[in-house]
Length: 198
Image 1 (tube, helix red, strand yellow):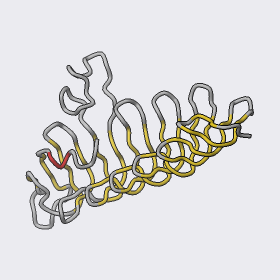
Image 2 (cartoon, rainbow, N blue to C red):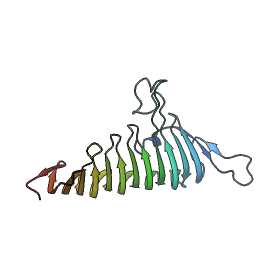
Image 3 (cartoon, rainbow, N blue to C red):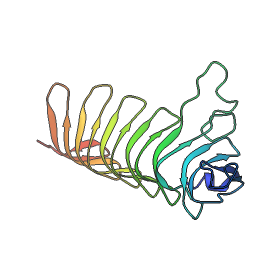
Image 4 (cartoon, rainbow, N blue to C red):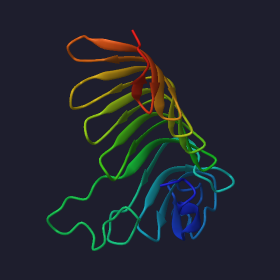
């Protein structure tokens, strides 16, 4: 679900504005002009937003929706979702800069996870909250799609919290607070306490 995946696909572009003196909006197999537009990709993915002079997705309020049709994307199960199943909503709403997710945005993933927060260069960067399909929540800082810096992870089952500094996706120092109010304060490795702590 990287930003550059759609760059390799053929698409049909249509401008969302009619230029002065024209009877209809421009369309084509490539972006013909900067401004608001829509791209419909061969696999059924759809982008609605704005494009820059280089033909890249670029603007603060854009939507990219991944197709859930059989064979359209790697996350779609073989044979599709079937008539009885409701396909997931898989989309990104937010900013793009020079073709990559940037600024404030929200992403719905095929497994039911959702992220709302800051992006840079197509990756989660800065403050954001990730809602896992299993009920867990991480709210804090991200660096290149990895939990990094100050953050809090809440376990959806037992409501315990890991609060502290994160490195490479795992808590390094901080506290583990349980629902009954007891806690461990100290160092962690692989999200588990090490040493005696406090």
